[in-house]
Length: 137
Image (cartoon, rainbow, N blue to C red; front, side, top):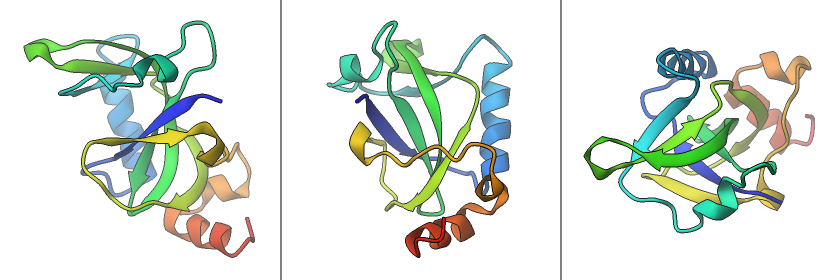
């Protein structure tokens, strides 16, 4: 099972806005990317070449709501690290997650399942998360 990262989608109040931001970042190249100060110590477990690697799971309003596959880690300006992401946002079954600064690891066995294109994918993240908590999703 791959290892993942979680990160608060700072400044995003909806999945649609996050999707727009990822598209804007990807408009300047083949991938979207964000920068961080330090290379994750377990980066080799996350970005496995040729094997299904990990994803960056996004937190909006204290819910894990979607993920972007991590393609690779690279260098960015100013000695920072670039985390290159696939530009698509894959919705996941919302799960409560406390906000935090920076990123945190998420084991593959603990990652929420992808939603696909069913009815839950069209619900607001907060409502879908409550339904999931009740076992109705």
